[in-house]
Image (cartoon, rainbow, N blue to C red):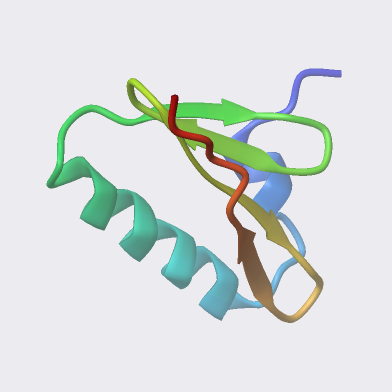
Length: 69
């Protein structure tokens, strides 16, 4: 199965999609954003890794997994 942003947002509260759109829009202000949907999360990046976004049924959670070399 191929995962997309839409598959992660299906069945979620509307606020989750709103937060996600604002996050992506805000990140684009700093340059290109690489969006990599995975099975349980959406990885965001540019030259370095950015926070990984996961979502629950009624909430949105972001956890940072970035490292700077």
